[in-house]
View (cartoon, helix red, strand yellow):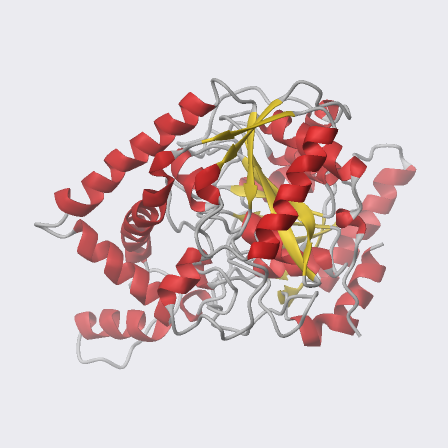
Length: 461
């Protein structure tokens, strides 16, 4: 299986650009070990299964670059918790995935290395920031992948590439060993070919970790046991605010058809309102850049990463390190965040954004008293052309308008293949209350059992 995936990588990677690094030696060594475990009857369900890891998660002795010049030579001396957990189950790591630099972007065009292409149409983006992870799973270069999600970075690429991508509840999966972007929003999750695989990977990576101060001590269920094939009587809300003005008509139509399917399968569907949703984009682009500004202050050219040494003094070296080490989008967000946190603006922007965040969270809490889950489009459009939005940051930010509120509220959500529009994938997003991943997986699994969208594969010549 590992050799088959590596051969597939050799065949199509020059056209796709999903891998920052192919770890073939490590993969084959781990595969041989997995063969031994299988023959001894000591294997888990993930033993020997080739996985791709987003390049912002630390793997010991393997470079972790975050697709940035700033970390091009950084080799972690330790494993992230999720890597430790998957290694304990016999994972085969076939490589590190390309991404938007420091996970800041919605298209993987912000990688300092190269652009990743969408396997359904190589002229289009795969989404971001986990674009490499989603594209590789869709193109059969890996059986599953790990991504991180700060404002939609697992779900939006999953929707654009027609795979299943789950953002767990904040705190459900340890962030130890994940390079920080916005610490109150970041969460690691799986990108897989179907919902069953999502459940299997979640069984492995979820759980409390004392090394992560935001890790939740909630017990972890066996997620595969919720895949019962029955959603009769489940109450599903359709938030009207998520069918936003400017949404592509055929995307809205595809999701309406998918919702009708859920009704056919026994769910009780009704419209609902989340009125503060319209403020989520503004809230996100104050909170996330503010936290990024604080987190990225550590890249000063002194301790690790890229270091400019030709300046007249320490201050010039630090300034030039950041000038040459960070790309344009990362600099834009650092400046936005630094401004929002500066004297005289902190109360007007950051504090106010945190108050509105509380309102958004409360609205979700109220809705989940009446509904078991919510269903929305994952993105307001199909995958857009490479280069189409690079000169218009606001249009790029709007591509995450359906996914951002979920991170702000800290609730779990999944994107699954919901149909096609003009031959391009449309993602359907399912949202539930905190720690109700089982409800999400149950609904998503029933939908996949009754449809064929997740079985379709792109043809890459």
